[in-house]
Image 1 (cartoon, rainbow, N blue to C red):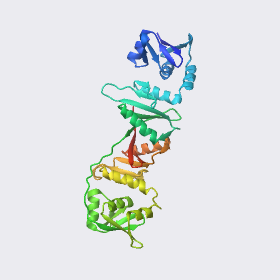
Image 2: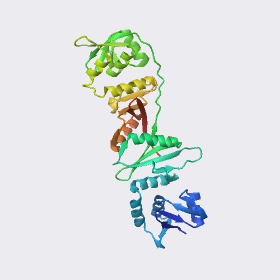
Image 3: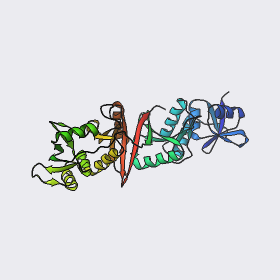
Image 4: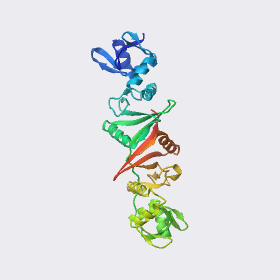
Length: 348
C-alpha cells in the first residue's frame, strides 16, 4: 500500500505510524513531530512523489507532481539545482537532509565514525566567490563538518568538489650560502660562481644550469637578495640594483611581481620549493620533497582578496591539476594574511 501525506503550507505531514516508520526509521526522511507524525520538507516530498513512493493530498485532493514542482519553485530560490543535487545524493545512498544552517543548502548526516558533510549548491552560471568560500569553510569547521560544493551544469549533470583551507608544509631545510654577484639579463639573473651555483641548485634547487653557472628567476633572485646571498648588477650599465630598484625595473614586464614574491617567500618559509607553474597555467608548482624524489604536489594560483570567477574557469583549473596528478590551491592575499584554499573533485 502506497504511503500518503497531507500538504500543509510548504510541508507534507505524514500521520500513519507505518508510513512514519518506513520513511524515518528505514530511510531517514523527515523530522519527527509529536503524536508520532512526520514532517517532510518540500524537497523530500518532491523526491518521493517523483519516485511514486507517496501520495500527497491538499484539502483531500491529490496533488500532482507538476503542481508540487510549481509550489517548490515558488517557495525555494534555486529550487531546480538544489533538487537535482538532493535527488542525486539520495540515489547514491546518502542520508541527505535540507540544512537548517542558512549558509548551506544540504548536508549529509554523519554515519558512525565519519564526518558530517555540508553542501553548498551552485548552478554553473553562478560565480565562485573566494570570500564566501573562506566563510563557508570556517562555518563548516566550527560545526566539525567537511565542505562540499555541488555544481549543476545546464544539462543537469553534477560535479562535486571538496573545499578546504590547507596548511601547506614541506620538508626542505634551509641552508647557508656564500655571497656573490649576479647579472641582470632582462627577465632573469645569471651567476658565474661555479661553487655557489652548484650549492644553490643541489641544496635548495634554485635556478637551472647556465654553462658552469646558474640562471635564476627574478623571484629566486629577490629572495636570495633579501637573504644576503646575492648582489645584482644591471648588464647594461653595471649599476648595483637594490631590491626596490629591481622590482621597479621588472614591474614593466611582470606587473604582479609583488604578489608573487609574497607567496614565494611564504612557500619557502613553509619548507616547500616553489617553481614556475607556467606550463600548467598557474603561478607556481610547489614541491614538498626534493624534486628528484617526487613530482610537484601542488599547483598554486594567486588571487586577490575579493576574487570572483565563473565556474567554468574554476572547473578548468581543477581538471587540469587532476590530469597531471596535482592539487590546485588558490592563494588568497588579504593584507598580511594568506589563505590557501584547496579545491578537488570528489565522488560522493
